[in-house]
Amino acid sequence: MADTASRTMIRTRGRKAYSAAFGPSRSGRRHPLVATAMVLPLATLLVVVFGGWEAVVTQASSVGVMLGR
Image (cartoon, rainbow, N blue to C red; front, side):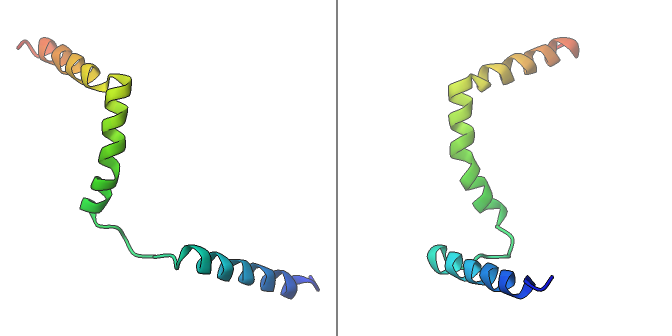
């Protein structure tokens, strides 16, 4: 317990160094369009690499058959 103050100072210095190197952290929320723009390239890559589009079409076709269309 006696060494608590020095550990707190070390943590504070570490946070300041991180903030100086990588910029201040933002605590606000990201706009949904910005989040979508960030995710779409990765989602597109995953669809192309793993054949996700064919899987979606196959599932939709199966659901259509079950519904009698």
